[in-house]
Length: 422
Image 1: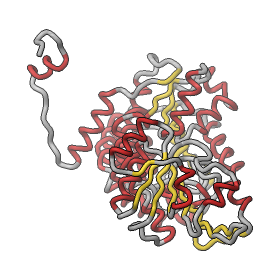
Image 2 (image 1 turned 60 degrees about the horizontal axis):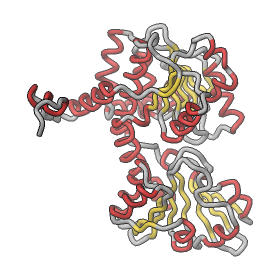
Image 3 (image 1 turned 45 degrees about the vertical axis):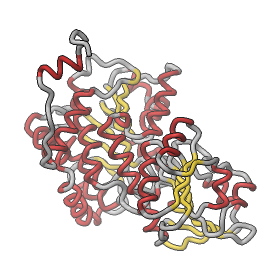
Image 4 (image 1 turned 90 degrees about the horizontal axis):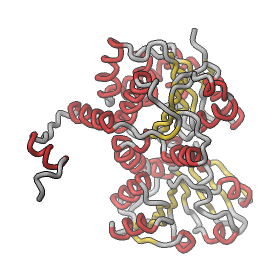
Protein backbone atom coordinates (compact mmCIF):
# COMPACT_ATOMS: atom_id res chain seq x y z
CA UNK A 1 0.00 0.00 0.00
CA UNK A 2 1.46 3.32 -1.08
CA UNK A 3 1.49 6.21 1.41
CA UNK A 4 1.44 9.71 0.02
CA UNK A 5 0.31 13.30 0.07
CA UNK A 6 0.67 15.22 -3.18
CA UNK A 7 -1.00 18.28 -4.68
CA UNK A 8 -3.11 16.74 -7.45
CA UNK A 9 -3.24 13.08 -8.44
CA UNK A 10 -4.87 13.98 -11.77
CA UNK A 11 -1.52 15.40 -12.95
CA UNK A 12 -0.04 11.90 -13.19
CA UNK A 13 -0.35 11.55 -16.97
CA UNK A 14 1.50 14.81 -17.51
CA UNK A 15 4.14 13.63 -15.05
CA UNK A 16 4.64 10.40 -16.98
CA UNK A 17 5.51 12.44 -20.07
CA UNK A 18 8.19 14.29 -18.08
CA UNK A 19 9.58 11.01 -16.74
CA UNK A 20 9.81 9.59 -20.24
CA UNK A 21 11.76 12.60 -21.51
CA UNK A 22 14.21 12.53 -18.59
CA UNK A 23 14.62 8.76 -18.81
CA UNK A 24 15.83 9.03 -22.41
CA UNK A 25 18.54 11.44 -21.26
CA UNK A 26 19.66 9.33 -18.29
CA UNK A 27 20.97 6.11 -19.89
CA UNK A 28 23.20 5.08 -16.98
CA UNK A 29 20.70 5.57 -14.14
CA UNK A 30 17.54 4.64 -16.01
CA UNK A 31 18.83 1.85 -18.23
CA UNK A 32 22.22 0.29 -17.41
CA UNK A 33 21.94 0.32 -13.61
CA UNK A 34 18.17 -0.13 -13.52
CA UNK A 35 18.28 -3.23 -15.72
CA UNK A 36 20.96 -4.81 -13.53
CA UNK A 37 19.12 -3.86 -10.35
CA UNK A 38 15.89 -5.37 -11.70
CA UNK A 39 17.67 -8.71 -12.23
CA UNK A 40 19.80 -8.83 -9.08
CA UNK A 41 17.55 -7.03 -6.55
CA UNK A 42 20.50 -5.79 -4.42
CA UNK A 43 18.17 -3.59 -2.34
CA UNK A 44 15.52 -6.21 -1.57
CA UNK A 45 14.05 -5.70 1.89
CA UNK A 46 15.60 -2.23 2.26
CA UNK A 47 13.65 0.99 2.82
CA UNK A 48 15.24 4.12 1.37
CA UNK A 49 14.05 7.64 2.23
CA UNK A 50 15.13 10.63 0.17
CA UNK A 51 14.73 14.29 1.00
CA UNK A 52 15.40 15.57 -2.51
CA UNK A 53 14.11 17.95 -5.14
CA UNK A 54 11.10 16.08 -6.53
CA UNK A 55 11.87 16.52 -10.21
CA UNK A 56 11.67 14.20 -13.20
CA UNK A 57 15.38 13.39 -12.75
CA UNK A 58 14.98 12.46 -9.08
CA UNK A 59 11.98 10.37 -10.10
CA UNK A 60 14.22 8.21 -12.26
CA UNK A 61 16.54 7.66 -9.31
CA UNK A 62 13.53 6.54 -7.25
CA UNK A 63 12.41 4.16 -10.00
CA UNK A 64 15.89 2.62 -10.19
CA UNK A 65 16.04 2.12 -6.42
CA UNK A 66 12.60 0.52 -6.54
CA UNK A 67 13.70 -1.74 -9.41
CA UNK A 68 16.52 -2.86 -7.10
CA UNK A 69 13.95 -4.06 -4.57
CA UNK A 70 13.80 -1.05 -2.24
CA UNK A 71 10.68 0.45 -0.71
CA UNK A 72 11.16 4.13 -1.56
CA UNK A 73 9.90 7.19 0.34
CA UNK A 74 10.40 10.71 -0.98
CA UNK A 75 9.86 14.21 0.37
CA UNK A 76 10.92 17.56 -1.07
CA UNK A 77 14.15 19.25 -0.01
CA UNK A 78 12.85 22.68 -1.04
CA UNK A 79 9.29 24.02 -0.66
CA UNK A 80 9.26 25.45 -4.19
CA UNK A 81 11.13 22.85 -6.25
CA UNK A 82 8.61 20.00 -6.28
CA UNK A 83 7.12 19.27 -9.71
CA UNK A 84 3.56 18.29 -8.79
CA UNK A 85 2.97 16.29 -11.95
CA UNK A 86 6.06 14.17 -11.28
CA UNK A 87 5.00 13.57 -7.67
CA UNK A 88 1.60 12.35 -8.87
CA UNK A 89 3.15 10.04 -11.46
CA UNK A 90 5.43 8.44 -8.86
CA UNK A 91 2.50 7.63 -6.59
CA UNK A 92 1.00 5.60 -9.43
CA UNK A 93 4.23 3.58 -9.51
CA UNK A 94 3.87 2.69 -5.81
CA UNK A 95 6.53 5.13 -4.64
CA UNK A 96 5.63 6.84 -1.38
CA UNK A 97 5.70 10.61 -1.90
CA UNK A 98 5.06 13.41 0.58
CA UNK A 99 5.67 16.58 -1.43
CA UNK A 100 3.88 19.42 -3.11
CA UNK A 101 4.93 22.76 -4.54
CA UNK A 102 4.64 25.67 -2.11
CA UNK A 103 4.46 23.87 1.22
CA UNK A 104 5.03 25.84 4.41
CA UNK A 105 7.93 25.32 6.81
CA UNK A 106 5.63 23.32 9.09
CA UNK A 107 4.44 21.15 6.18
CA UNK A 108 8.03 20.73 4.95
CA UNK A 109 9.09 19.09 8.21
CA UNK A 110 5.83 17.11 8.44
CA UNK A 111 6.76 15.49 5.12
CA UNK A 112 10.23 14.63 6.43
CA UNK A 113 8.75 13.07 9.55
CA UNK A 114 6.32 10.97 7.50
CA UNK A 115 9.28 9.49 5.63
CA UNK A 116 11.21 8.82 8.83
CA UNK A 117 8.18 7.07 10.35
CA UNK A 118 8.69 4.38 7.70
CA UNK A 119 11.88 3.29 9.57
CA UNK A 120 14.22 3.76 6.59
CA UNK A 121 17.56 1.97 6.38
CA UNK A 122 19.27 4.40 3.98
CA UNK A 123 18.74 8.16 3.91
CA UNK A 124 19.58 10.26 0.85
CA UNK A 125 19.56 13.95 1.75
CA UNK A 126 19.88 17.23 -0.10
CA UNK A 127 20.70 19.91 2.43
CA UNK A 128 20.90 17.82 5.66
CA UNK A 129 17.34 18.42 6.88
CA UNK A 130 16.25 14.78 6.94
CA UNK A 131 19.39 13.40 8.57
CA UNK A 132 19.51 16.18 11.16
CA UNK A 133 15.82 15.62 11.92
CA UNK A 134 16.55 11.91 12.39
CA UNK A 135 19.24 12.81 14.95
CA UNK A 136 16.97 15.22 16.82
CA UNK A 137 13.55 13.56 16.66
CA UNK A 138 14.09 9.89 15.72
CA UNK A 139 17.22 8.89 17.67
CA UNK A 140 15.88 5.35 18.07
CA UNK A 141 16.44 4.78 14.33
CA UNK A 142 20.13 5.42 14.94
CA UNK A 143 20.46 3.71 18.31
CA UNK A 144 18.81 0.46 17.23
CA UNK A 145 20.72 0.30 13.95
CA UNK A 146 17.71 0.75 11.66
CA UNK A 147 19.61 3.43 9.73
CA UNK A 148 22.57 1.69 8.10
CA UNK A 149 24.12 4.76 6.47
CA UNK A 150 23.29 8.04 4.77
CA UNK A 151 24.23 10.02 1.68
CA UNK A 152 24.40 13.81 1.28
CA UNK A 153 23.84 15.31 -2.13
CA UNK A 154 24.81 18.97 -1.87
CA UNK A 155 27.61 21.29 -0.73
CA UNK A 156 25.58 22.99 1.98
CA UNK A 157 24.64 19.69 3.57
CA UNK A 158 28.20 18.36 3.45
CA UNK A 159 29.41 21.46 5.29
CA UNK A 160 26.85 20.91 8.02
CA UNK A 161 27.81 17.25 8.42
CA UNK A 162 31.51 18.06 8.57
CA UNK A 163 30.71 20.41 11.45
CA UNK A 164 28.65 17.68 13.15
CA UNK A 165 31.41 15.12 12.65
CA UNK A 166 34.05 17.46 14.06
CA UNK A 167 31.95 17.93 17.20
CA UNK A 168 31.23 14.21 17.54
CA UNK A 169 27.53 14.77 16.87
CA UNK A 170 27.29 12.70 13.68
CA UNK A 171 26.02 9.29 14.81
CA UNK A 172 25.59 7.58 11.42
CA UNK A 173 27.96 6.61 8.60
CA UNK A 174 27.71 9.48 6.12
CA UNK A 175 28.86 9.42 2.50
CA UNK A 176 29.31 12.96 1.04
CA UNK A 177 28.19 12.20 -2.52
CA UNK A 178 28.67 15.87 -3.33
CA UNK A 179 32.44 15.47 -2.95
CA UNK A 180 32.69 12.78 -5.64
CA UNK A 181 34.22 13.96 -8.90
CA UNK A 182 31.29 12.63 -10.92
CA UNK A 183 29.03 14.90 -8.87
CA UNK A 184 30.75 18.22 -8.22
CA UNK A 185 32.58 18.60 -11.53
CA UNK A 186 29.44 18.06 -13.56
CA UNK A 187 26.16 18.45 -11.67
CA UNK A 188 27.49 21.39 -9.62
CA UNK A 189 29.57 23.19 -12.20
CA UNK A 190 27.74 22.48 -15.44
CA UNK A 191 24.24 22.12 -14.03
CA UNK A 192 24.25 25.17 -11.77
CA UNK A 193 26.21 27.10 -14.38
CA UNK A 194 23.49 26.52 -16.94
CA UNK A 195 20.98 27.36 -14.25
CA UNK A 196 21.60 31.07 -14.71
CA UNK A 197 19.34 30.73 -17.73
CA UNK A 198 16.56 30.63 -15.13
CA UNK A 199 17.22 34.32 -14.51
CA UNK A 200 16.65 34.99 -18.20
CA UNK A 201 13.46 32.95 -18.07
CA UNK A 202 12.29 34.93 -15.08
CA UNK A 203 12.94 38.42 -16.44
CA UNK A 204 13.67 38.10 -20.18
CA UNK A 205 16.86 40.02 -19.51
CA UNK A 206 19.78 40.34 -21.90
CA UNK A 207 22.98 39.34 -20.11
CA UNK A 208 25.21 40.98 -22.71
CA UNK A 209 26.67 44.21 -21.37
CA UNK A 210 25.29 43.75 -17.87
CA UNK A 211 27.34 43.83 -14.68
CA UNK A 212 26.69 40.41 -13.16
CA UNK A 213 27.88 39.77 -9.61
CA UNK A 214 28.59 36.12 -8.84
CA UNK A 215 29.02 35.54 -5.12
CA UNK A 216 31.50 32.76 -4.50
CA UNK A 217 33.84 30.87 -6.81
CA UNK A 218 33.33 27.22 -5.88
CA UNK A 219 32.18 24.52 -8.28
CA UNK A 220 28.67 25.95 -8.62
CA UNK A 221 29.45 29.65 -8.79
CA UNK A 222 32.49 29.27 -11.06
CA UNK A 223 30.19 27.52 -13.53
CA UNK A 224 27.73 30.39 -13.22
CA UNK A 225 30.47 32.95 -13.85
CA UNK A 226 31.61 31.12 -16.97
CA UNK A 227 28.09 30.94 -18.42
CA UNK A 228 27.34 34.57 -17.61
CA UNK A 229 30.54 35.65 -19.36
CA UNK A 230 29.64 33.42 -22.29
CA UNK A 231 26.38 35.33 -22.59
CA UNK A 232 28.33 38.58 -22.82
CA UNK A 233 28.13 39.83 -19.25
CA UNK A 234 30.84 41.70 -17.38
CA UNK A 235 31.30 39.30 -14.47
CA UNK A 236 32.45 40.44 -11.03
CA UNK A 237 33.28 37.75 -8.47
CA UNK A 238 33.11 38.24 -4.70
CA UNK A 239 34.89 35.81 -2.38
CA UNK A 240 36.17 35.26 1.16
CA UNK A 241 38.68 32.53 0.21
CA UNK A 242 41.99 34.01 -1.00
CA UNK A 243 42.83 31.04 -3.22
CA UNK A 244 39.44 31.00 -4.90
CA UNK A 245 39.66 34.76 -5.33
CA UNK A 246 43.02 34.29 -7.07
CA UNK A 247 41.50 31.61 -9.30
CA UNK A 248 38.76 34.02 -10.30
CA UNK A 249 41.25 36.83 -10.93
CA UNK A 250 43.50 34.63 -13.07
CA UNK A 251 40.44 33.37 -14.95
CA UNK A 252 39.92 36.95 -16.09
CA UNK A 253 37.13 38.10 -13.78
CA UNK A 254 37.03 41.27 -11.72
CA UNK A 255 37.27 40.53 -8.00
CA UNK A 256 36.12 42.95 -5.32
CA UNK A 257 34.22 43.09 -2.00
CA UNK A 258 30.49 42.79 -2.46
CA UNK A 259 29.92 46.17 -0.79
CA UNK A 260 31.85 47.78 -3.67
CA UNK A 261 30.02 45.73 -6.28
CA UNK A 262 26.46 46.41 -5.12
CA UNK A 263 26.11 49.94 -6.56
CA UNK A 264 27.09 48.83 -10.09
CA UNK A 265 25.33 45.44 -10.19
CA UNK A 266 22.59 44.80 -12.72
CA UNK A 267 22.21 41.17 -11.65
CA UNK A 268 23.37 39.51 -8.42
CA UNK A 269 23.60 35.72 -8.26
CA UNK A 270 24.59 33.84 -5.11
CA UNK A 271 25.73 30.24 -4.56
CA UNK A 272 27.88 30.13 -1.44
CA UNK A 273 26.01 28.00 1.11
CA UNK A 274 26.39 30.83 3.63
CA UNK A 275 23.83 33.26 5.04
CA UNK A 276 23.54 36.99 4.36
CA UNK A 277 25.95 37.19 1.42
CA UNK A 278 24.45 40.65 1.10
CA UNK A 279 24.52 41.93 4.66
CA UNK A 280 20.99 43.03 5.70
CA UNK A 281 21.74 46.68 6.35
CA UNK A 282 20.00 49.84 5.21
CA UNK A 283 23.27 50.98 3.64
CA UNK A 284 23.48 47.89 1.47
CA UNK A 285 19.82 48.00 0.47
CA UNK A 286 20.11 51.69 -0.42
CA UNK A 287 23.23 50.95 -2.49
CA UNK A 288 21.37 48.63 -4.86
CA UNK A 289 20.63 49.97 -8.34
CA UNK A 290 17.12 50.62 -9.53
CA UNK A 291 16.01 47.52 -11.46
CA UNK A 292 18.63 45.11 -10.06
CA UNK A 293 17.76 41.42 -10.23
CA UNK A 294 18.50 39.25 -7.19
CA UNK A 295 18.73 35.51 -7.73
CA UNK A 296 19.99 32.75 -5.47
CA UNK A 297 21.20 29.39 -6.78
CA UNK A 298 22.49 28.16 -3.42
CA UNK A 299 20.51 25.77 -1.28
CA UNK A 300 18.73 28.05 1.21
CA UNK A 301 16.81 31.32 1.01
CA UNK A 302 19.12 33.12 3.41
CA UNK A 303 22.04 33.89 1.09
CA UNK A 304 20.05 36.86 -0.11
CA UNK A 305 18.55 38.30 3.11
CA UNK A 306 15.03 37.67 1.87
CA UNK A 307 13.20 38.26 5.16
CA UNK A 308 14.93 41.60 5.76
CA UNK A 309 14.44 42.77 2.17
CA UNK A 310 10.72 42.04 2.40
CA UNK A 311 10.54 44.00 5.64
CA UNK A 312 12.44 46.95 4.12
CA UNK A 313 10.27 47.18 1.00
CA UNK A 314 7.26 49.48 1.16
CA UNK A 315 5.44 47.47 -1.49
CA UNK A 316 5.75 43.91 -2.83
CA UNK A 317 4.13 43.17 -6.16
CA UNK A 318 4.14 39.78 -7.95
CA UNK A 319 4.81 40.48 -11.63
CA UNK A 320 4.85 36.89 -12.88
CA UNK A 321 5.00 33.45 -11.35
CA UNK A 322 7.87 33.33 -8.84
CA UNK A 323 9.11 36.85 -9.63
CA UNK A 324 8.36 39.80 -7.36
CA UNK A 325 8.94 43.53 -7.73
CA UNK A 326 9.94 45.07 -4.42
CA UNK A 327 9.60 48.83 -4.20
CA UNK A 328 11.93 50.41 -1.68
CA UNK A 329 11.19 53.57 0.35
CA UNK A 330 13.17 55.72 -2.11
CA UNK A 331 11.13 54.36 -5.05
CA UNK A 332 13.77 51.99 -6.42
CA UNK A 333 12.52 48.71 -7.87
CA UNK A 334 14.26 45.45 -6.94
CA UNK A 335 13.36 42.19 -8.67
CA UNK A 336 13.57 39.08 -6.48
CA UNK A 337 13.53 35.66 -8.10
CA UNK A 338 11.89 32.64 -6.45
CA UNK A 339 11.57 34.30 -3.03
CA UNK A 340 15.33 33.95 -2.67
CA UNK A 341 15.19 30.18 -3.11
CA UNK A 342 16.82 28.10 -5.84
CA UNK A 343 16.06 30.13 -8.95
CA UNK A 344 17.26 27.42 -11.31
CA UNK A 345 14.79 24.91 -9.86
CA UNK A 346 11.87 27.22 -9.13
CA UNK A 347 11.84 29.26 -12.35
CA UNK A 348 12.99 26.49 -14.61
CA UNK A 349 13.26 22.71 -14.11
CA UNK A 350 16.65 22.47 -12.46
CA UNK A 351 19.72 20.84 -13.92
CA UNK A 352 19.49 19.00 -17.24
CA UNK A 353 18.74 15.28 -17.03
CA UNK A 354 21.95 14.47 -18.90
CA UNK A 355 24.13 15.82 -16.09
CA UNK A 356 21.92 14.51 -13.29
CA UNK A 357 22.41 11.04 -14.77
CA UNK A 358 25.87 10.93 -13.17
CA UNK A 359 24.76 12.17 -9.75
CA UNK A 360 21.91 9.70 -9.53
CA UNK A 361 23.98 6.83 -10.92
CA UNK A 362 26.37 7.54 -8.06
CA UNK A 363 23.56 7.52 -5.49
CA UNK A 364 22.13 4.29 -6.92
CA UNK A 365 25.48 2.50 -6.73
CA UNK A 366 26.22 3.95 -3.29
CA UNK A 367 22.90 2.58 -2.00
CA UNK A 368 23.98 -0.85 -3.20
CA UNK A 369 27.44 -0.38 -1.64
CA UNK A 370 25.94 0.58 1.72
CA UNK A 371 23.78 -2.55 1.82
CA UNK A 372 26.62 -4.85 0.80
CA UNK A 373 29.09 -3.33 3.28
CA UNK A 374 26.79 -2.54 6.20
CA UNK A 375 28.79 -4.61 8.69
CA UNK A 376 31.97 -2.62 7.97
CA UNK A 377 30.54 0.91 8.27
CA UNK A 378 31.15 3.13 11.28
CA UNK A 379 29.63 6.52 12.22
CA UNK A 380 31.24 9.60 10.70
CA UNK A 381 32.17 10.95 7.29
CA UNK A 382 33.32 8.31 4.80
CA UNK A 383 34.77 9.15 1.38
CA UNK A 384 33.00 7.85 -1.70
CA UNK A 385 35.01 4.82 -2.91
CA UNK A 386 37.06 5.89 -5.92
CA UNK A 387 36.13 2.72 -7.78
CA UNK A 388 32.44 3.69 -7.69
CA UNK A 389 33.24 7.24 -8.82
CA UNK A 390 35.30 5.81 -11.68
CA UNK A 391 32.63 3.25 -12.57
CA UNK A 392 30.06 6.00 -13.05
CA UNK A 393 32.53 7.87 -15.25
CA UNK A 394 33.20 4.81 -17.39
CA UNK A 395 29.51 3.98 -17.73
CA UNK A 396 28.73 7.55 -18.79
CA UNK A 397 31.51 7.48 -21.38
CA UNK A 398 30.18 4.20 -22.75
CA UNK A 399 26.69 5.69 -23.05
CA UNK A 400 28.22 8.51 -25.12
CA UNK A 401 30.16 6.11 -27.31
CA UNK A 402 33.51 7.42 -26.07
CA UNK A 403 36.58 5.22 -25.52
CA UNK A 404 39.68 6.18 -23.55
CA UNK A 405 43.18 4.80 -23.05
CA UNK A 406 44.21 2.28 -20.41
CA UNK A 407 47.53 2.02 -18.60
CA UNK A 408 49.85 -0.75 -19.64
CA UNK A 409 51.27 -2.91 -16.85
CA UNK A 410 54.57 -1.07 -17.23
CA UNK A 411 52.89 2.33 -16.96
CA UNK A 412 50.89 1.25 -13.91
CA UNK A 413 54.02 0.03 -12.11
CA UNK A 414 55.83 3.26 -12.97
CA UNK A 415 53.25 5.69 -11.58
CA UNK A 416 52.34 3.52 -8.58
CA UNK A 417 55.87 2.55 -7.61
CA UNK A 418 59.21 4.11 -6.83
CA UNK A 419 61.84 1.54 -7.78
CA UNK A 420 62.40 2.70 -11.34
CA UNK A 421 63.17 6.29 -10.38
CA UNK A 422 63.06 9.15 -12.86
